[in-house]
Length: 147
Image 1 (spheres, helix red, strand yellow):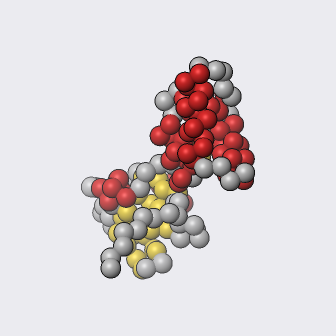
Image 2 (image 1 turned 90 degrees about the vertical axis):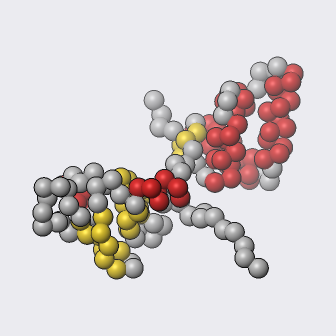
């Protein structure tokens, strides 16, 4: 029976802009003809591949790099949700206490029904961030930088 899988490992990625900084950073081979931007070369675990301006350079969990065409990247990857530090601390605490996502949304729903003042975290979730919170809970997140 065929099963459906999704990727669960996170990667770092940046879109290749053809700059000397990125060429040096990823040790790319430069093209012979630069008039039209040219095709650069990137060494990966699977061998040597071409990369063009607009493609993405991904870095995996073990520091390995590879090139991904822009259209494939956009179909395959999405940015990690960015959440406030306080919310990230609550997620860690709630998971440590074996709370389920259903319980958390139950608390949020109760605060919305009774219109009581909840914590900053509950207010953040209630103010249009339910989907972001659920994605962060399930898939991981990045903590927003302090201002």
